[in-house]
Image (tube, rainbow, N blue to C red; front, side, top):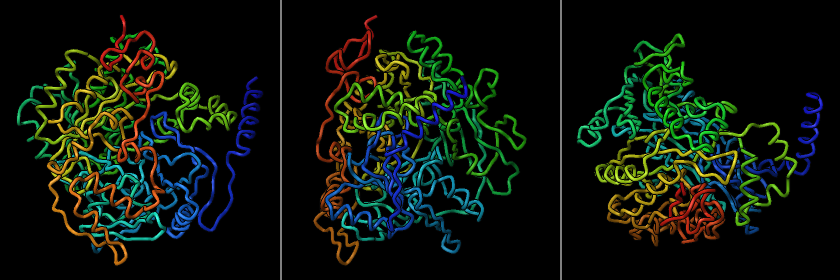
Length: 610
């Protein structure tokens, strides 16, 4: 029987690949007919082909082809963003940038020049081998450097540049007309967070610093400090600070990461708990467990997981199924611990240990079958055997939605007042993340969500019921109430993270207001990037989003890099609600049909009727 099952799987997989993966060598890159998805998301991208260029010249040829034949094109890397920002319209060309992965270190000027598809972890490893590092990293090292700058991916520090966008000293792009441009100096500010709409980014140059080590100390404290100036002051004097807040417990888990000389003894590792992004997948090995809690509405169990998560940040709770947050040189739990940046500041993991790296075919089938509005519905219809094969060979993964936003640090107390009011009305456990605080200094990027002042980033994760897409998470009402309250309060100036969130955040947030010129005090200057590329018509536009759209049009006159995300963000396109859309946090409900089983839509929120 077992051999029959394996034989059946092999046959199905062979049949599925016929017409699905067709490789035709081209001088400008290999062509694949395939599909890809956004991380932890039901967003599936369905281009007509995926090209895999290995040189800048090959990218240029692809873009010139798209320009000539009026095709859309979109580059993607590790597709770690959770939205359709990485998707071209159906029938378009997608460029897999992961083969643009060169790494060249200039020790003399302390810079590293990388291909846009180079993975952050690989770049950090190469730097450390030569005695250098980045002054700060992101949480997860499995992202490409082009993607990291595209959405402003960040670490956590008030003292140091916290995004790769801020560490940029140069960028090379292929414009929408197929020209290759290198951008440096003040002109770079408009490209630091490029969203993939200003050109295909092919190479980037970053500043680096001499190698150092990191001393990590994690500990719990009462959350009363949040409501005092001492909280932000603690972040201001720390090289890198991460804070996990569990409101139900009125506790904070503090992770203090202090830079120490490279000769400091210790070669420890951050492995789990609140220390690395892989902890969610390591903690919950079976999605079915979480689904069972949701289906039975077992809030007590969810809160127990939340409490275990909290203690795992700073103590050894492996007996309860939580991995140790930090390991010393001998592989044992340690707190504090010393280690190199590549082991302490950033983490990576590979499927199946990190389930978010694998697609969820069951989700795809259920999702597209109930939502004919999705432009990529034809994916399953065209290749049912391929997805059936994946369904039989891959386990259902743990999927989440993320509420991720930034506010000016000066508005922290206003945020806390809004949060406390919502939490009092909709008390909830947040078992996958708590409320994660990270910090960032001012940014020079035109559409960076940090803008030009110190910023606090927040992230919360909600579990999606994978086994039954008609059932809402117990946390849904709280999450959506919080999201609506944050973006409704214009004084808070909450800005959604470009690479995270769901459609509802970008649709409900008044981006034009929170990116208004009064909040972005950059000095407008005439820009002359290239003797043939004057964008003076854009240089006097005061509003950052309008100016960005103008620059995008200048370098991409036919809009070949535009997609649905661009249309919603810069052109006012709206996503129509569909049945159960609130469960995916794609909408705030208008009627009961947008909510889950046993829920009613009341004032835009899905309430459980009992």
